[in-house]
Image (cartoon, rainbow, N blue to C red):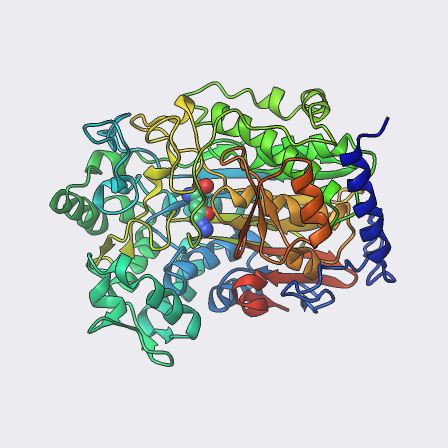
Length: 585
Ligand code: DON
């Protein structure tokens, strides 16, 4: 007999299904990709479906900052490929988007060349050689905030070495060529807009205790909107790197400045740490989902495995419930919950921990897990954790060039403006990536993530990431979607929901990006939903089967590019400023 809870849920489902009125197709995508359908968002949701996306006939770049995307545009117009452009965007973001763009942090890049080659490069920071498991615990064994703010919070930066390595293998231009747009933006300056002003205004207190206060603020006030912001120290650093290669960052004046600042401020990064840093080429996680193929990031990021594990569970439903229904939210949230239980306990730097990649990404394992999802009842996560904090920063950019090569890159300082430590002489912020380790295994980090021994601190180890740069091919093997996000653990859930919105719910890219998102990360054992993102019926249906629901302002920050008839659409995260970050031809 059907339990009453299921009956109620089904009634809500029928009600909602009646509201879903798919419209005619927007575009024929070919490649076995079905036509698009217009979604119905909950009444009062802040974005309307049907908003146009940026379009480019030949190529498209979507990032969080238009001038950085324009840097990539300039490089493709000059004959560069997507990798050349991505590296140009990466360095430009370090200039125009200092909250997350960086040379003092690290990231991950997934590459798909038009000739069929694919690759993934891991340029995640590593723990300094003097790091140790309990370095952020006080006398009582409680975590301090030293893994988040100040000189001790930084891992050894990987961005410069990683981008240079990606360029040397898959690019066609020299480092100096692709860095010119960034150097110009730093040297000649760029106009401060309301986005940069707003970011600095909200980070004033965070940045007040270190040298950034003298560069990004005047008498305590953020850079004025409309003024030209020049960064001569950063321009010099970028010029050294352009002329001498990554060595100029890890050694010489820049490396010495980093180490001197660390020594003065009580940090632990040494010359030996900088010399030892190496990016790692990895085999991308290759997943299949309903005939589509995904290439995504393996450890030291958890992104690829966790997205794959989730999609594999969802694939066991021949058709997923309609978007917006409580049944869909329940299945999706429960799949995330299960994938995050594995993520939080089993994933870590593969040089230190044996990660069961094959098992976690296998269809049979997902089938067994999916069977534990009870349609009538939410299952609890074993222990409870704490809350997620909003307002962190990372940045993802997606690039497709005019030859069909694609790059998905996510890079971060971790927190907005990293550890808040700004190296004035050399012009950049240092990361606070050490907090991505389980600094106190079993206790929540700043994202409320509860992780365990596998991800404990050890010298030379990479801290586990959630960054999920992903490239999706359609059933005929043609490039369809380049996607990824910022947002800590919400990176995984937001990235995969854009993919699901495109594949299962047949939304166009603009709608797929604007659809309300939800998130579950096992602990805290709560379904997080964007405010206004559920109908009353859906909320009631979910609560009835046991979900705790927590509303949040905005979940994650995605930048994506998708193939459409005759070209490419690009959408920069609408939650933080619309299509301002795309650049195309
Ligand atoms: O690597 C990670 O998973 C985190 N350091 C990412 C941090 C982040 O996305 C902050 N957000 N917006």
